[in-house]
Length: 345
Image 1 (cartoon, rainbow, N blue to C red):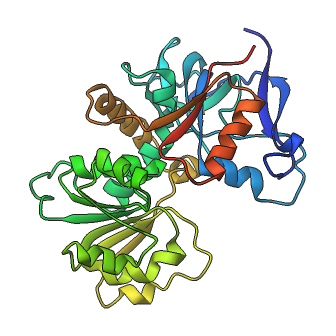
Image 2: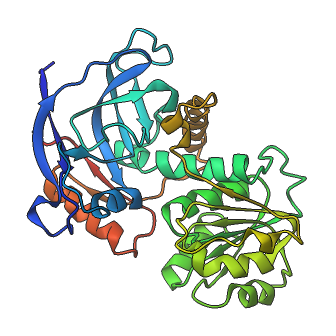
């Protein structure tokens, strides 16, 4: 193996059209220790967090920062304590917020947040899945505490998923439907409505209208669960009204105004944040659940019980194509995921 590799990153927080917003540079190939895997990257996807990290900030970094939090690749080396994988295994993962990202020729990643890649999916189809699947899984089954095995018990329960056609929403609708819930997904355009219904939603509502009216016009006074994936400030009051007493709300979006938790007291509603990187960021005792979840997600994908949300492929992995992918994600009109595959020479 070569002692150096190329990576793509940034040092200044710039608009994507600026020449230096992303650039290629050479660096040493990192050496795996402990439970680390060294993965040769085959495909990456771009998520809103890539855009946010690249854009938000004013400082100039001392060293280039490599982003990218979805990848599929091959294990080429591993640390002495790594035991879940063998050299040559094909893997997929979202990685850690604190470490160098996947927009690189090689990447170090802790095996506790890595899964065996689905065997029946292409590299691009697999790379579209880790971050959104883990986020949806943890939000539904950890934060909302839905019992995914109790399909019969969930049959009389409902969930409102706000932004059902986004990356996380596209997985959450599938997982919630598979768990037996009645799924109401929000979408505002004919193509996103069709996408939500295709991915497991029973009904749709328009989040550009008043969601209280939209949900109640469908005949639902309240819903048991709400998963907020779009704009918590815009939808907070609607969620407070729509959630059933003793219900649960989870959100992945950043609030810009104080969240009025007192408004939930009378209904005794539980509210929870979901951030998929918490486990790897703090190396929590349950960190390796992400390995377990990804292996189960791969099984569901191979069995056809989940479908990949890949909608756009670019090749090869280079500055030009990553910039194009960032533009697509920034435009906020993407359904599903955009993936860049195949390493540039």
